[in-house]
Image (cartoon, rainbow, N blue to C red; front, side, top):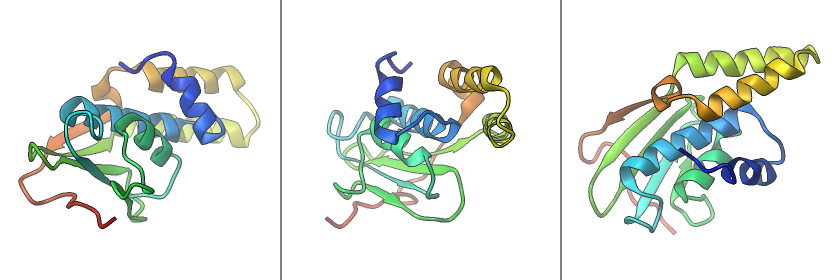
Length: 152
C-alpha cells in the first residue's frame, strides 16, 4: 500500500484532496506493483484516457509524466490507464471499478450541496485504504496492444 507520506504529497502536488486524484494514484500504484515505477524496474510508459484529476495521482504513483514524454494523455472520457514496461514487455490495462466511481459521484453530490463534510472525508479515506480489487480492475494486454514509446 502507498505510504502515509504519499497522500499529503499528492494533495500538495494536486492542490487539494479529491476522489479522482486518489483513484488515479490507485491506478498508478496498481500498475507500478506489476511493472515497477518508471526507471526503477525498466522504462515504463503509460497512456491515460481522460483529462481529469486522476492524472496527478498516476504521475506520482507510477513515476511517469507528460513532460518526460512517458505519460500520454488522450481525452477520450475513459478512466482507463494502459501501461507497459518496455524492457520486460509486460502490458496492463487498469480501470476504475464501478464501486469506486460511485463513491466519487457521491463525493461530488455532497460537495455541490456544500454538505456532508464528514462523509466526504470518509469517502476519501475509503478510496485510499480499500483493497485494490475494490478500486481497480486489472487485465494483462497482449503484446503490442498498448503504449508504444513516446516521442521525446
